[in-house]
Image 1 (tube, rainbow, N blue to C red):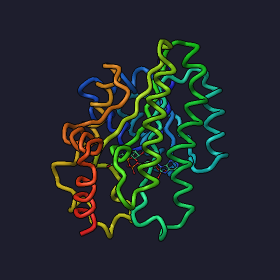
Image 2: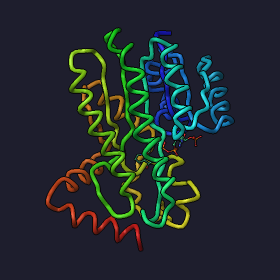
Image 3: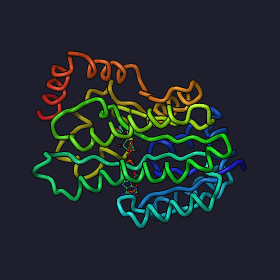
Image 4: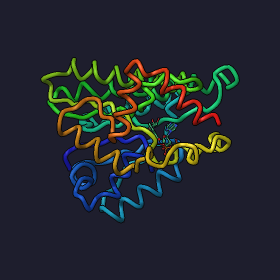
Length: 267
Ligand SMILES: NC(=O)c1ccc[n+]([C@@H]2O[C@H](COP(=O)([O-])OP(=O)(O)OC[C@H]3O[C@@H](n4cnc5c(N)ncnc54)[C@H](OP(=O)(O)O)[C@@H]3O)[C@@H](O)[C@H]2O)c1
């Protein structure tokens, strides 16, 4: 083992690397090189994933149950990072959406989102970096979203927190130039995970409303993230269609794009 990788999600994007082991990516990136630390709230899911990994790769991932919206739980992980002394990979991926309108939803949910997306990612990056810099190597992946480039109604806090992560990652990588530490803002579009299966999304029927062609598999997203890391690209927008959407969102056609998206999602 070469070091430790701390992953914030049990079944979502990063862990889908495990399903593409045959391609050699996971063996290279996760299972062979790193001791794994898996972080999320649902202990049972984490433990069953750890068992699955044990059977598949003969590894024994550590399970860290934490609610990243709680400062005390983040502190616990910061201590674990300090103890490890040699964290090689940090994936800040925990996240969720809040459908509906800002004024109608409870304020607490938005504060939780800011805590999970922004505060936890900033605090854990800060905790991980000193040892990464000292050893001249390390990787931080902040899972953002193409939402970082959109500013549609109903997703204000989601888009704003993801924009924070994207700008933070880009600026941090500039600051870390020459240290050997790599930072990535991974900005996926619609991806098949549990994200849109949450009960809060049920009334919106998003899976039916979003054209099939816009959805990607988690494997594809992960593969492109790893490729971008190798190429030294800080902002990774997986998928040609997502790159077109982002280009439109950064062009004078943005109002038209947002109108189309809103129409599609609201009707
Ligand atoms: N799927 C998409 O279409 C899509 C598109 C763009 C960006 N993303 C981003 O990708 C990231 C990963 O999401 P996903 O698609 O893999 O969705 P997912 O399958 O729902 O995974 C989200 C993970 O975050 C964990 N989590 C949520 N709240 C948490 C909290 N308070 N503390 C600790 N862990 C928490 C969940 O575990 P527990 O519930 O057990 O805590 C779950 O493992 C998110 O940041 C999301 O914004 C997703």
